[in-house]
Length: 320
Image 1 (tube, rainbow, N blue to C red):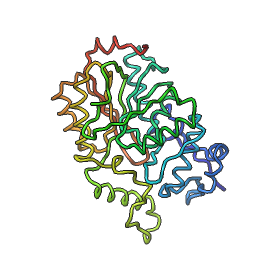
Image 2: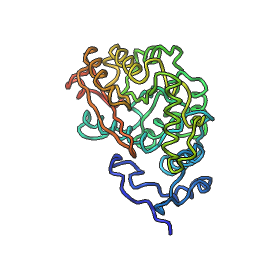
Image 3: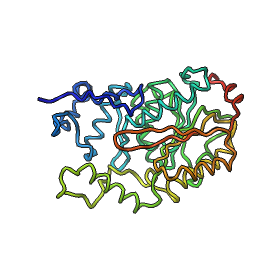
């Protein structure tokens, strides 16, 4: 007899809708395609094969429909299919950070403007942030195909049309240049930077990830990455890897000290933190915060920084 997976995932944010696991009956009810991917594991718990990209995508579709009122969502082959609970955690923790500048109240509504650096093809952060808190987003990317898919997602979900705008970064050397205009005021930036420094490194990591997921069969180890499991080049690697990307972000952010309350990014590799802190000190960040996050066995963290004094932070208006 199957058992419901109702164990509380205490490492997820308290407001995360998947904190008590996936309710597959409810998810299948809103997206029946998911049913063929759900099976009972050796612990008699319902789950999916997370090494199967189609299963992961079906789970994502069901979660987006069930939790975030998305009617139609898809990503092209070869693009990153993100874990939604982890992405939701990032949004919730930043909401808590904004509350510290708003008398303990999470600011909601379209006047909270967010800049998503590297929105990818999936549009996940804007979908979650808008559905949960009503925020507005500008999503940027260097990949025109990715942005076109985001346009398709927005067009298929009319509630997103006024909530998300998209902008192509035409020069991959820059992050904020060509994007932030003198009139812009963002409550925060959000970013899931490329982790790896080369395509070879990204490929090895993808193979290792798949083999970890398939560890139940030690005679069936992969030697090739699943093409639509790892993601596109721009999503996975860049010159200098994660540290190089975030270092560039930090230096550029100093040019817009009063146009963004909090600059934030995920940092996957803990060994990069000391260098990031040194760079933020060099560019005279006034306040730096590190927010620990965990999902499953993976530990990550958000680094957030601001160039505003405590008085300037307090004076920040979340209303236009």
